[in-house]
Length: 346
Ligand code: 13P
Ligand code: SF4
Image: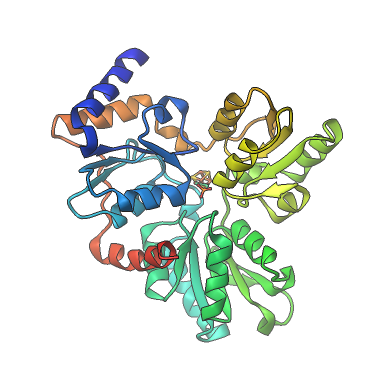
């Protein structure tokens, strides 16, 4: 039963004390978040994993790429666990390292040595390693503008992996016109661009988030019609068109902060993951808050981490027979760390 599972989690937490660290991403279910030692967006959780020198067991309540990042940033003695190995990320899966190596060769034929690669942290360790090896850095939705600005100080052009929307929205905010952005299609192995190729400044990997793509221009039109006073706030993983028509756009943290500091009685439609939207609704009974898409938009893979998996994972650690260790191969980890360190140093 739920009570028994909760008791197991509580027991192991009490027994292991500070030897156990349980970070939880904002998109996790309440049944998991209630036990988190820290909650945050991907940037904060990456920083906390790096700072934590005490924990021997880091049970990451988030998705696979976040657990990999935690493993890369912690010492070899610290072990990272993911309560359900099926908690992947469809966006991270859209950039595979072999596709990326092929793209890099072709892009070098077109643009020579003028491109710096950047990758959203929502990517595999192998992609982070590719970026690290080639002088680039990781970015998160909270520091994307700062990192893209940094990248343009190094090179004339950037390759932004794997989320075309975060890349496009960020570059656009920094003043790069849409007709100077090309899209790399990894399935067809070619650049999608019409115009003078010399003008291309940003090459966007053709990947997206299958959760945030569900917020549409139609949803915005409906809200504008039915609730003209409602403010619309979305995550920059939403398409350019959706961001353009919204009132505000920003990372998970930005969304939380904007709602927190808004006036009593204010009305919001939020375009981000369902568990976070539901939590914000609960925390602000004095405000009128809805999901921008009335069908809500859960991240199926984030939701694979649930109370039964968490209890199972912790019980296995307690019994000395742990499952689901996330271990990035050391040569990949070392190169990936270069990319992460360039971001964390800023
Ligand atoms: P942030 O936590 O960086 O806002 O990222 C959102 C996301 O999609 C995580 O998977
Ligand atoms: Fe990946 Fe999107 Fe889910 Fe985040 S919300 S884990 S980007 S699929």
